[in-house]
Length: 124
Image (cartoon, rainbow, N blue to C red; front, side, top):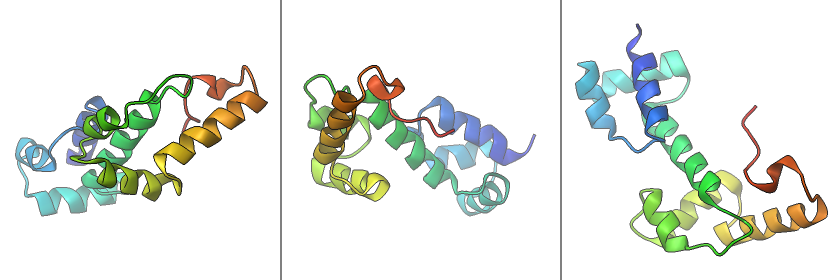
């Protein structure tokens, strides 16, 4: 099995909450070599893939119908403060977390019963 494929499974299984250094130790290669091979085989570095999984898990954790504890979401996404969380969120969506929820709520009001009613759009 290629080293990149086993580590990508670990990243997916942990929703990105894994130290990349731990992956390189488990794979028996340097973190630089792991990143290079990973990018060749997967198309992105393990750090980027973990970041994508963490963001997806965060979006899935948002219930647009209920109150949102942004501090809990930020901590759950591995951020030490809401400012970094907001920056990461804007990097992915172009929106602040609050604006994202406002847009999502508006969409759901205009399209009741839509598949997005309880979850974000799938990557497919």
